[in-house]
Image 1 (tube, rainbow, N blue to C red):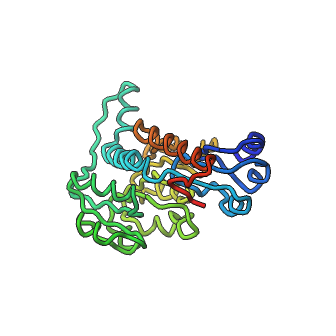
Image 2 (cartoon, rainbow, N blue to C red):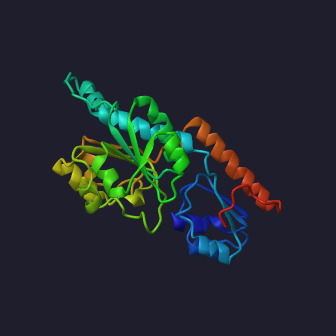
Image 3 (cartoon, rainbow, N blue to C red):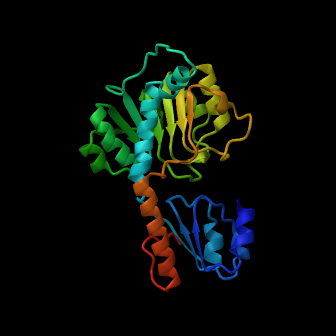
Length: 279
């Protein structure tokens, strides 16, 4: 929380930050701060204008956690398609139910955001014999062609996809993009996967789409409120998988992010150019 950061920041020259909220008030309290080194890629919780105004360098670690997040997204698809969590809970209750799952083979997976993580998801899904479609306003068309990915407008992607996986940054154009209108355009019985940012999804609209049966299930690694508020409707749904923003927390990703954040923090403090400056 920003209030906690304000209490700790005075006298600090370097700040290695996770998902901390670093607003203008934090920068005002930072009397000696020279660098905020983000442990991860997202910088939506950092007030970049306030950083610039006070001459603070902001860095991040692009690519360090891409494989880890991509693997989680695919794990979500498999868990949803084969009712893994529901079946596990049933067996542990002493039941032995029969489930009819969904195969990834032959299904259409829509990838929203064909950046570093989206591309890794696509490459790995090729082994499952999926049909791959994607939307990204800055898509690498050669990569798409080389990997048999059909680039589509968003509405067409939603109408055709059995699984929709989000790999977008939080921008004005993407904030709250998964709303009632978006969900109404998804293929009936489809699954939604979000291993990106909670701010992309209007959770009340998602809960309504799941409750109505329009969507078959959803898996979310990021939420608007982390942890979720008591009484959040998504908490009580068997067809929803929720994890505590753990996409980047695999051994290789954790090591790479920690090393990258530390190296850039120390570089700025030594008066050197960091590898991955954002400001």
